Length: 385
Image 1 (cartoon, helix red, strand yellow):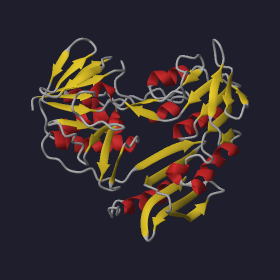
Image 2 (spheres, one colour; image 1 turned 90 degrees about the vertical axis):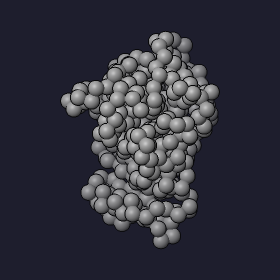
Image 3 (cartoon, rainbow, N blue to C red; image 1 turned 90 degrees about the horizontal axis):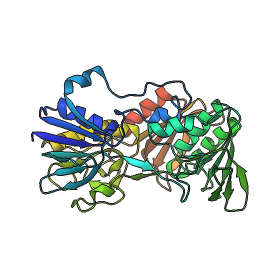
C-alpha cells in the first residue's frame, strides 16, 4: 500500500491518519474533508466555544507537521469505485489509492421544512456554532427541540448567556433510553434547577414565522414564543455517496469489530461506522468522542494487514449547568440501577447498572475519580448476549 486516503477531516479521520503513521505507514496519505476547516474538536461547540469562553478548538499539534499529510479541504467525495479503490471528488479530480478510510461522520437532522428558516439552527459544525452564537444574546427566547445531550448542553450554555430557555422533548422522560427513567428524571431536574422550562411527552407540530421564526407550535396546540430555535433530534450518517460501491449500508457503513467493511483495503471508523461490538454483541454506531479517538487504532491496524477487534466499553460524557455527567457501558430494559455513593438530589452521586449479578453500566454526576475506578471494571468481562 503506497497511497491511502482518509475521507473525512474529523477527529476520527485525523486520528486514523495519525495511527497509520504511528503503525509504520510511510506512503502518501491524503485527507479529504468537505469543510474548509482543519479538524477541530466538536464537544466545545455546544459549551465553551458557544459561550465565547474559548476559540481554540483545533486538533492539530506541532507533531502533525512531520506526518506529511496531503490535505484536500473544502472537497467532498462523491463516489467510491471498488475495483481500483478510486475516489471521485467534487473538485473534478479522481483520487486513486491502495487503501481507503471512510470517516465521513454524520450530519444533524432538521425538523421537516425548517432548514433555511431564519432563527432555526442545528449544531454539528463549527459554522453552525458561529451562526448560533451570534443569536444567543441576553433576553433572547430560545426553544430547544430535543432534550438529549446536545439539546441540554445548548440550553445550559444559553442560560449562562442570559437567554430565556424552553426545552421540548417528545418522550415523557429525557434520556430514558440511555439512562433509564429514574436517572433520566435526575437529569431532567438539572433544567428546573436553573430556571429552564422542560415540556415533555409532546411532539412539535410546526415552527411558525414568515421571514423569521416567531414561535414553536406543539401537537397539543400550545404555541411557545421563540426568537431562536435549536433542533437537537439526532444525526444521520453521511454514507449516501457510497451507494453502488458494494459496501453494506444500514444506518451507516457496516463493519466487523476490526472496522473491516468486506471490501479489501477499505475500512470505516467513527460516527459513520455501524460496527460490531465484541463488548455488546451487537452492531451499532457509537457517536461519541472517545470512540472517535480510540477506534482509529483498530482501523489503521486492519488497513495495514493486522486486524484486531476494538474492545472498549461505550463511554460518553456531558457537561450541563456546571455538572459533569459520565456514563460507561450499555443499559437495557430490565436492568436495575442503584446509587452506591452520594445523593441524586445534590447532583453528586455514582450509580451502577446491573443485569442479574453482572455489572453492565456506571453513571456518575460530579464524581470523576470514583467513576473512573468503576469504569475500569467494565473493561474486564465481555457481556453475555
